[in-house]
Length: 58
Image (cartoon, rainbow, N blue to C red):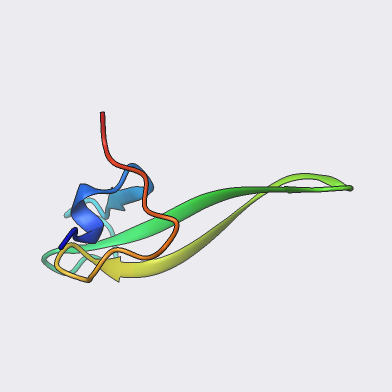
């Protein structure tokens, strides 16, 4: 089973950031609608199970 850390949309939070926790990151996904392009972000952990929008890292 794939984890969030295996996804191209997962970005680790830097250690010097106020929101830092070990293994924590943001899941940032690009969307597009009739008004234009936008991104959504939600906090996740590396060990969380990957969602249905998972894109493998290259």
